[in-house]
Image 1: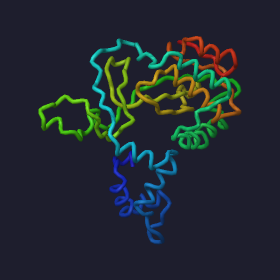
Image 2: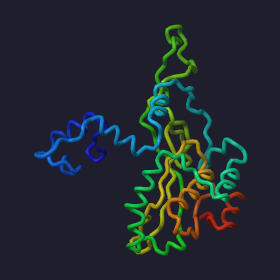
Image 3: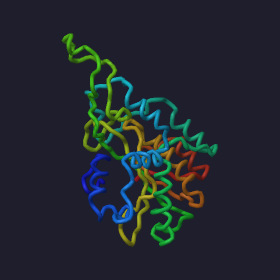
Length: 267
């Protein structure tokens, strides 16, 4: 869908039904069977995204607090501070107790990526020694296609109030404002937190872990979550060195290193 520029399930279904080449690509023989119905495509998405569909539907239909774009800039190469004091230590303590974060809805996507990409790459020798993996992790900005202003459902505009803060309906209710320290600007969306393993022969960074988080999530928290999830996804792999930026320069992360979960360092 993305490769061909289609973003709507209905239009995509119509295109599949009228294109024998695309039908064959998804495993349907045009002369023998029909493309699965439109509802089946939505069911297919639900099976991959491990969240109760009713909860997701309620979130999209309900009204949410409106947050204006922050006016104050954080600064060049500076990150948003953690919203809660001591949150990194709390997550580290959970990781040291072998507790994981299994409630993530994208867990199945991570497992598919591990089975179809990372593990075959390991067998091909592309990741080097899995008993002493050297991985680097960092966050990146992912902008949402939803409008940050949302749709007003109140009567404030009719009453002459154009700058109200009443709850609104948002197309992407989980998106929020985050700070892009590289471009020195605010963005509306999410943070992608990714790990990669460098291959010196191919001179490329091969991705081994992918995660989508809140835009305002600090990388120090994301790193701990990633460590626990990586251990769950690849129980036979040992992370020898974890290379991060200044977000990992704190005592809780050093505690992880002492207990053998990782060895954080800054370039």
